Image 1 (cartoon, rainbow over the protein chains, first blue to last red):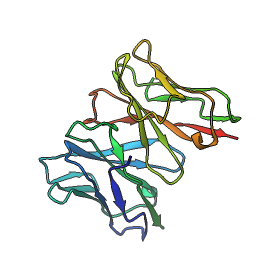
Image 2 (image 1 turned 90 degrees about the vertical axis):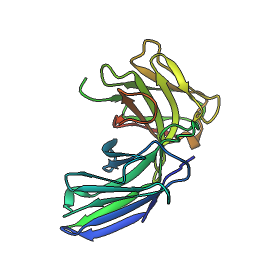
Image 3 (image 1 turned 30 degrees about the horizontal axis):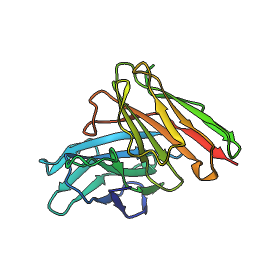
Length: 113
Length: 115
């Protein structure tokens, strides 16, 4: 089963613009992670935000977490062509449910030069 | 090695055949995970090992799927009597922290095609 649900499914923007992707989930969590996947490659960890954190930055990435709404957003500022990839949020289930770290279906981001 | 290594990178087999997929995790990582990813979907959890034991195998779809990690390092995912619906990319990940609360390091995946 997939707990996370990213929105939008696809996003195309011009290089230099900011890209925002959203993630909604269903259960209580310990933390939420964002991963990136280039076409035909494995996933690469971007950032982890804990359930008691509201915002976190890493370079051009900004992640927010709203546990009351069970949602998170990933903002990529000053986008580059190399940011073209699929982005996934992943959550655990703090209630001890099974299914491991569960991923959403992803947002496919295209940065047009 | 420097990262998670998966072999083969591509495997084409016929319906009904037996397949083994291998994962070599990052040295020292005690936690190892198998995921399956279909086209246009996110990774779907299959099984999690802590050391040599399967701590959570709730994601294995049926008894045709089995995974082992006999020495707590390399893991093999085994699929018996393959079906066309098993076609997917099988991803392996490892972690130093274990559980589901830390960063996972993924391999490039093994693409399985069942004809």
